[in-house]
Amino acid sequence: MKRPGVIVIAVLGALLAGLLVYGVAQQGDDTTLDAAVRDGKRPAAPDQTRTLPRLGASGTASLADYRGKVVVLNFWASWCTPCRQEAPLLSRFQSKLGSRGTVLGVTYKDDPVDSLAFARKYDLHYPSLRDSKLELAPSYGTRALPETFVIDRRGRIVALSRGEVSQAFLNNAVSEALAS
Image 1 (cartoon, helix red, strand yellow):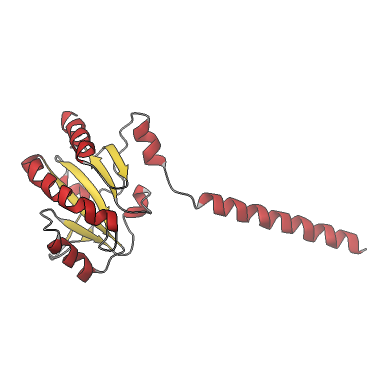
Image 2 (cartoon, rainbow, N blue to C red):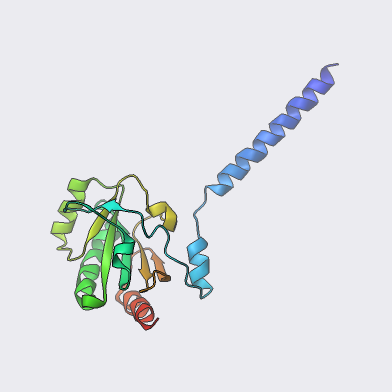
């Protein structure tokens, strides 16, 4: 009589273990955008209308506010060492873009006071938005910093970098975005 109970418990245990394995597997990095760009597709930038507070200014803004311009969307934080290393390059690149586009920074779970100090220290000449509650970053599969997405005038991702960007990456990706 005890055998059916043991079998039921064993089956339930196996089901729970299967669900646990499935849940852990689903927590991996979202590479949907990476795969699409790698395959030569230009996926629409996610959550373009999501508004976030401006860093160091009143009001909110969204990626949609920059439609018609090339956008170098850069997720960063003051505590991120590679972010510190690429910040001067991104600031210089903002000047190079001129009226054709913008670098748009998005802070990733960073204290606004620390973010402002970072922006001043590295003399950032581009706007940044605050994603303190991670309302935008997960849509891009962002989990590690820095991460950069180059978006064309029509709101499509043409290139992405999960890690510190280089001058060559920016030059090539923005040239591609301007050509479309």
